[in-house]
Length: 237
Image (cartoon, rainbow, N blue to C red; front, side, top):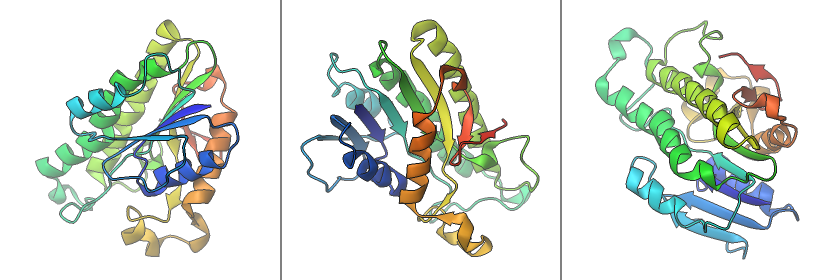
């Protein structure tokens, strides 16, 4: 298999990398991230990418030779908070800065990755474009409110995935586009909120990725455009 991972230096991206490195079926791994990847496996080709810069995304995509046909593209980027941005508890916490930053990373970045990368996927066999999304991006599942900019950016991402799936049916019938909800994973993203979650509901990155890869392996063409949780269940938009 030939696989591309965007966001390969993040917690979940690294777990995807280690998972595929442990598979004898993995021929080549095209990795993209802002930070270096320390692993020196001969199957790895690493390039810099800034998903908030379309020029950087296009340049990164062009490093994949035209003769290569990828089996998987996995977009494992995302942001919930920074030192200056925290999830909103109230409408009073809304700001342009929060919305613009979270949409830039969670929605616009994956959209432009799709624009420049998706044609690299195989047309001759089943291929997958998978993006990390979140259950809180489901409108029908929202019963708590709050987290406005994160919820909205992920809801928009889910619509983006649906759009990709519709166009793929016309341009590349072998392509499956899906969103993946990894669950609550031990990471810097979830750490500030983990005290409110039962310990058995917090997953190691390795466990979450193992489950998500199993979801990818079992996808059919009818699954394109859907959002899947780590356990294979479908999350309604």
